[in-house]
Length: 76
Ligand SMILES: [Zn+2]
Image (cartoon, rainbow, N blue to C red; front, top):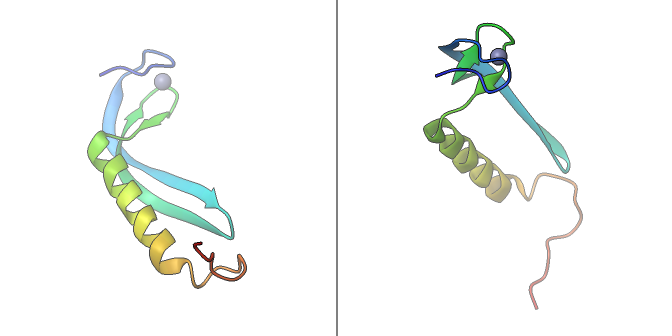
């Protein structure tokens, strides 16, 4: 596997992952990933991406009551 940016060699390491959501931020310090030895660009495999998405889905569901985004949406 080689880096899409610089064609450098990829190593199995860990990389931080973070994203901003409305009202909160999510960040992991070390998620398993392929990291370029030249430019440091991380690539997450499908398995990790899936786990991240699962965690985010749970967080959105369970954390909805905590974030100050106003009253719960009323479904008509
Ligand atoms: Zn690279």
